[in-house]
Image (cartoon, rainbow, N blue to C red; front, side):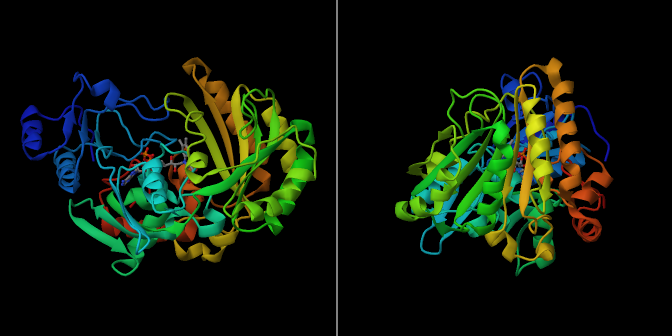
Length: 462
Ligand SMILES: Cc1cc2nc3c(=O)[nH]c(=O)nc-3n(C[C@H](O)[C@H](O)[C@H](O)COP(=O)(O)OP(=O)(O)OC[C@H]3O[C@@H](n4cnc5c(N)ncnc54)[C@H](O)[C@@H]3O)c2cc1C
């Protein structure tokens, strides 16, 4: 498909006639606000932004873009680290006007519109003491997170978001609406769970829910970076033997908060973070070893609410910063890995971190080939992240991220979480899923989107 610069005025007028949302064009008052996405590096100028309010708007927008031979970017929450939800000169199908969440407490399910944010899903489900496993920053979109996988605090207890996905309402490349589930179309449902951005616009998701909270115990024990090996040994052991209802992170970080520590703390630190999804007595018992075995600089564990924990990083991860990351999976946490992570974070430029999450538990009870998502069999996920504000410092932050991951690479295993990957190209995407899954995804892509209408994503070439 060629990329047209500006759609014709008469065609736009026809689109407006059938469109219930807002069409935003360059020069409109709202244009500069409407084109902004989370990662400030992705500063693009689409030819048209279609702010949809319902499924019919999405259908009209897809058909219009195809007629006008416009590149399509689909925007859910706008958090794509690679900037996939915007484009230069094409059409953004913006779902931010489609954010409803309907909870059925009796069936323990939620129907969630394609542009909803995690905070909306969390808030609506917690009204009934329920939750769906999602990510850890409230302003992330349910759409992109789910179609990529959805890792977060509840994954050891209840699996990834995709493990709780019951069905997807999808507007296809042909502009049709269909429901995709394990019963309706198991093969496409397989592909949607990990490579979903390739196959259409998800206008609604249906999820299974679990009783969670509202009270949980959460916090961190923080150590000077020089004690990284000791902290990692404790973390490693706890991840292996601790209960599945505890989410566990190990964060090597610079910056004021040390990702888990008090805000007044400065310099590089290593923190073990945990969220315990049981009652207070169980939490005190289960976390005692983490909190007492080594002498931390700070211990921030406290009884709080699930909603408070789920929004605690929202400000730190606010819109407007520049961001680069690289992610990977590990089978084990070697001491040399720990030394290298500590070394790179100690030499970091500003707000940089290397964070691990322990997997296992519910994520490991599903077969690796059950879905397109690849990496659930690994013991740990690791993410190298850099934030900054000044565009003149892009190069040095990206270089730091690349160097840090290059040093950790020998300890990683095959496969990557698609939502972490900024680099692009067929080899990169083959590396995310592995050969066998990539070929299976190609067959699906040929069947459902042979012209590659949906290609602003980690793209499966038809
Ligand atoms: C601050 C931050 C925190 C994060 N935390 C986590 C975390 O805890 N766990 C985790 O697993 N991931 C996390 N991520 C990664 C996140 O899951 C991805 O960036 C995800 O793609 C964001 O989804 P979105 O809808 O906000 O993004 P968008 O930028 O809107 O979209 C991302 C991709 O998904 C596609 N897409 C989005 N919605 C739809 C839809 N409805 N239909 C079809 N395609 C769609 C877009 O076309 C694009 O290719 C985080 C990212 C950020 C920036």
